[in-house]
Length: 319
Image 1 (tube, rainbow, N blue to C red):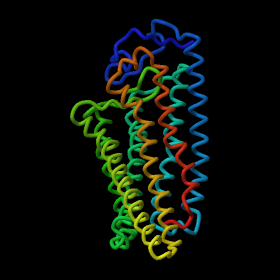
Image 2 (spheres, rainbow, N blue to C red; image 1 turned 90 degrees about the vertical axis):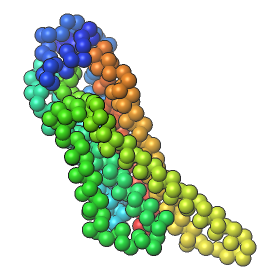
Image 3 (tube, helix red, strand yellow; image 1 turned 60 degrees about the vertical axis):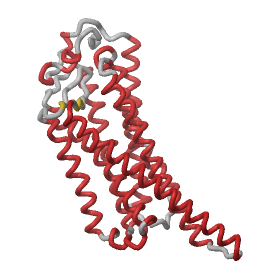
Image 4 (cartoon, rainbow, N blue to C red; image 1 turned 180 degrees about the vertical axis):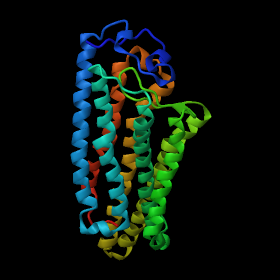
């Protein structure tokens, strides 16, 4: 049975310079309860990843493989779903396999985390900025409709997507080389993401805080705009008895999309808050309870695995 101890420092847990800790260096065996918890984590996290993969594949049928996918919005949505699919297909299963490999005594090169954790963090960050592209698209369409034709140009949207990818890569890559933090191999076999100092805070802001703020702000603005317009139309109908069924139908569809974008932001934040709380307020849990900390990955995979369910409530004709 694998030995992991809880009476060592954080440096001992990750090893100096990111070196892994051998099984023989642990001082107390893994209890039966923690063994059961570890096996449950492996099974549940792998299952959610697989289910998320299937849901994202189904989500692509709603966005990319339908004729309505010719709209820029659906192409941006397909981009977002594709990123979630890759995260469920590759990034999360890789961490499960690494923990399994560590459990069965296989040696994992510490430097491997420079690449593995980079792509993991990059996939999460790019997903946030893909959501920003969706929010900006809807914001312009509803709040500034006269300028929407320019924003539907393929070159403009490709530039937005490329900006998000390049920004995330530029922010995260330095951590792979120890600037502003580290990506160590943790004692449990998974890779860690430990931003520190001013650069670490800048990385966290670029990958999470800023995109969440943009999405929340645009979604709330869209929602308020639609409700205001709909109330004005209701007042006009009350005066002249007219029925603007089609415009109201469009408003309802847009309101559904705005609500989806806002709920995506809330859901993403909820799935990442536990990581932030433990990372910055209770880092000692990586030492005292490394098995339970693994559940942070399970919560994070829910962010990408459960999102496609919302796609099936979007009106088909929205663009």
